[in-house]
Length: 416
Image (cartoon, rainbow, N blue to C red; front, top):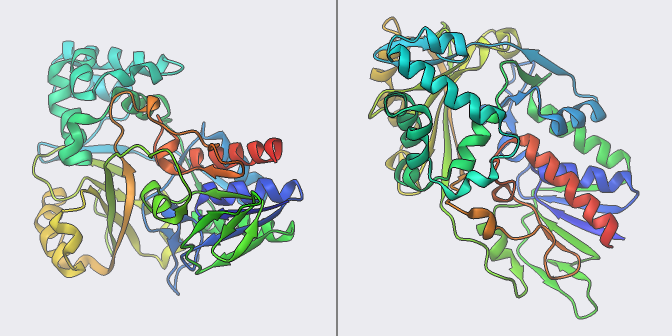
């Protein structure tokens, strides 16, 4: 049996590895020249470790990706970084029940109300039933209007922009239920985890082809599959749904049309520390970036040429002006806000910068999305779809990418 896996993110990698373990002939195609997808990274000459294009970590309950790391020999580091928020011109800690109770921006009653509401969400084992509600409608009732207005409404609008009013409550449940205080990171970065996974695939007899864009997937008359000009018994497509639809030359039920946001990060190398926390949410209105992630407040700067490295992160709609701006234009826009974050900051702190952008980085899940969600196993024997809009109600996380890849491999072994 010969299977094609299209897409070299962690869904494709996990699927290909699981198939190779079963001694199935597997070929993985990736359009880019590196693996990892949104979790891929860059490594400068003076750096000992690679660094993700888009900030990444895992939670300590992310079982699937932690098991993958153990399997391929990638060491997991467990850290306990500080998570903060920037509100009323101050960096404050709001990452635990105790820090919430100390937060003077809300009355005691509102703090307790928010704490109880979030605790309820944390205790729900499966929040899929919440998908019939919109976050903007249910969350204020659950945690209190004041807490919602001061904190969560700002985060929701900053992240989803024009689509904030459509996001369903099940998605918000995942953000609360999955979060752990301790965070995990992989020695030498997520890029190294991807490389170690690919090395094991190849050792087990699998094949990986980089820099190869697949243009057409077509079913043959004998039931086999053509991937461009190569024959396969089955195909797993892990690329984003809009890309997949252009690739497939076979009759399919329409994939649900949902909005997607671009991911954009401005990565800065600094010679001084900017913020106290590792992750700082911006809770101010009309701010040009959503989050500041100072990676070297969690991972030692010695691995990055002794530079302090941070991200200024955004999710942006396709028509955002920022997506058309140059690196220098973005930095010029951000400078006044960086000074607001840290009044001592000066442009001369910046030793280097890079801008990274990717489409389809964040799916926007409307109410009752599960009723529209297609099955991984399609009506065509041998064709499987597994992209990041299908890990619902969870989104994006590499852990669920790995889980989906493993699940697809099990289906293939059972079906074919």
